[in-house]
Image (cartoon, rainbow over all chains, first blue to last red; front, top):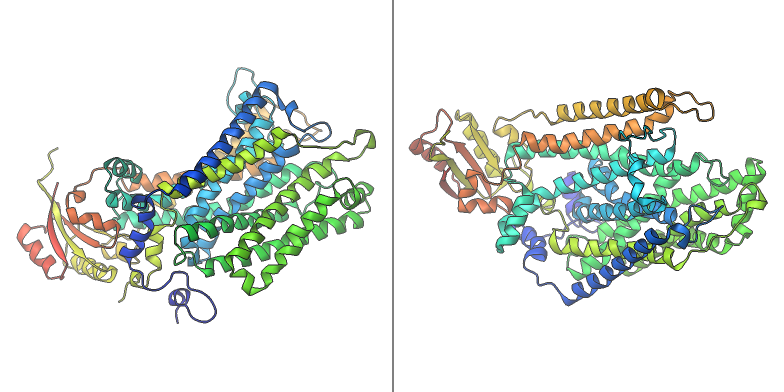
Length: 458
Length: 178
């Protein structure tokens, strides 16, 4: 059995990537009808409405922040980095799964990715957009946030390129730009399909303009595939670099608990870990509501669970090494950081973190749970919580007690911190709601290539 | 410049295999200016119509080089020439610190070159195109496969080309007005 049919046929224990019996036409109709003909349900309006209101709450919190300044947050000296940076790192990490699915799995020829890459990429975009809000509003004078970029100015000053914070500006903005164009060129052939299928003149005009006159010429496809493959090759080191650079924000500082060389790989693994959890938390309800179980099969759920299990173990290894180095380095400040995590005022969160990220996900070793959507949904939620706690521990617990006990302090988030954080979740989900309503959430043309009839017989 | 009234002759097929075979035969019959349309990338189709190399990789390479060089030189110029600041005695030209931004700029420029280079080489955006005049062509983005012989081809002849395409047993044949 060749590689292709092996992936498609429901042989052995594994579920197929796409259920048998589909044709080019039925795949096209099934996915495009969600956008074009399916009536918008009340549930959609309710869900979108709720998340839209949360977005408004975030804007309110940010508006108040602009009026009053970051004093309304719980940040202080010594904890200058509070929720803003915790949430920034959490959101950026979530984005990483989308690029991993669309780029790295493409290079590894994992064709099961074809049915989840589109919405995973959309998730990346919205997650990075949510992440980007935080450093901008955290700078104190957000109307001067453009000073982060090097541009010729009458003051004659330039950014400091020896600082990892400036590296981060370049890493995150490049990541967002490349994710956006990668997602968009993936959409072009499907936008052309919607243009040709749509009965509504306005919709046809809009899809037509966005499709830019795509007509599926063999020459176009040839260049398109080359460009897509090269973009995947470029996005692969990029995605690994982004969370590496985010970890440099910490690792290059001398604060105990930050200043370690394990941070880059440990951050990247944690990013993919939380990202896959978010993919599952979105995919499980979406496939049920829109009846896409034939395209997003148990195989996808199980493979994602396996990725989570593997990256979760790498994250666990990171925790063990952090603890070991706290003892082995002989550095009293590092040793104290470990002690403070276990016995300090935030110890409860550290043990919660260990439970959420290390202990509970081990359930995924059980195959029955890996293929059960309900269980996966719960475990994914636990992992997302755990990864948020991890960033909280890294940012807050490291900062609140550093070298001098005269400068120790405590951090308590205020309601404005919570409103902003919950608001970005609302904005993220509102964007996902819009996305599934107006764009094909599964790549139609890549699904066609999975069908047996797509193969050219000699 | 006024275009000829007929843009070409189009034949419709119902499978990727039939299209690739037809494209091979048409190319071998001496038709040079032909194109094929499919709802997904078909392996070997570009070769079948005689299109073997594309310039996208070169564009990406040039984009990446420009990005990397400009990224590094920008940092060098800013940190060592325009705005030298002594931070903890580190050299002005502290190249290891410049690698990250150089890398990101390389990826950014190469990636944008891939996207815009691909679009430009494909002549997109082009919302109007004569092939859209064929009503059946709407299925080219769903489940149908099309082959066209352009009227600008030296061998094109409205009668003989139609006869030749009929010999390929297509599902339908239409003349494409421009």
